[in-house]
Image: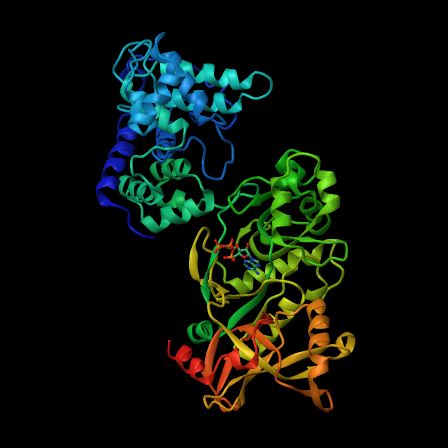
Length: 598
Ligand code: ATP
């Protein structure tokens, strides 16, 4: 965890401590009676029996200072746009202020907080919502809790006339603001708090205010995605309370992300690599709870979340059905949904994204583009959190969970529906073969993961690597090929690549073979293109007249005695035919030398 800016941490800590300093009751709080929680929605911060008002304030403040009303896992939004906010400000600011006037000031001052603070509002007795949580003004002073509750009511307004109702509610709040309070209310409503307080700051402030280790706060935040709750637990139950916070089925966790890396690089770092196919789709997190008593429903509870923790359950009924057919015990699974055509072949990932955004006519959308989930990780299985277990143990759990239900076609891993396979190896040739297979099956390539690593939500760490894109490519002459096998017997494949020797008589020297990155359709085209140039055949191998130039990507250029150029391309990938180039335009050994030195 990166330490946040200390000065800001200090301020926020002071703010958090202030909200906890005195819990002696309402008479300290400007005499304002907090109305009951009625009508505030289920998610509103509760009072735990009405006693601890300041704990509730703390919970809210930890979110407000980040410009949030709802915890990060909750995709509820206020759903009120800038123009509605301008209208509420204008109405509260008095009869001679119009929304146009607010917009003019915005153009001038550049920021809605400044604009809101430049007016005076209705009652003008309200002090204390943001500047002083206790408040010391008259009977109508706003409190943090009231702002929170009112904004939750605003979020909950829907249906006919809700846009006007939201403006009315917001007008009511501005009407009771001081100018300074309005500055922060406007920013909060439009999610631009602009006080330089990021997540790291609040994390560090919680640790400092309640004297708990930062890494425990961090862990609690990872499992809960709720700064408010973590602050409150840290205050009430300290470290033990934080340690007892767990994942909850139904509440999303941030996805672990990947850095770029190379096969050779990771094999130097780790003794072995876990290799998986990289599916070209969109990330999903599946939450499944079969227990009707716990969920209060008569059937299993299934929720599907996107990479941004948005609830996309309704848009992806196939994933829900998959869970119902395949799972039997509570689980949180991490995976990818891919779009497939009628034959089950992958479609471009834009097709998946269209499905994610779809709100209506889902049954129809599903007919055109079907999505299929593939899971590669398991964060929770039947009451046990697995974030701190090694990847291979999590994967074993995943295999077990997916094999239980009726949906699995068989017992061996490659028969288990929805399971992404994992290979452990330290052999670069084997990794190359897995990569080739993945590409052949129409996927993006491979992911390389540290088999012993834990799951770090939201982190783009070193433990997950995606293959670096090929930055440079080479233009190589195709000097040989091999006839394929089985269903590919009539296609040429495995193309021998050569580059120009440095002398000028047109001599070519070999540098490697490329077999990956080529679909059946392309292989058929390449066969048509190359067959006329066959000059000799021995068994499956053919020699080709040097005519055709391929553009190939690669991971690395190595010195190697295997090929006559003295170099070998590691992980060469076919990118395309350079119809515009002749062998004399192909790359030379000299260029290989230069690229290797880079
Ligand atoms: P980024 O995650 O770097 O912001 P991105 O969304 O384009 O960018 P990539 O970086 O290309 O994704 O790759 C990581 C993504 O690959 C994951 O977030 C996940 O959606 C997808 N993915 C596909 N297969 C796997 C797998 N086996 N393991 C992990 N992620 C996978």
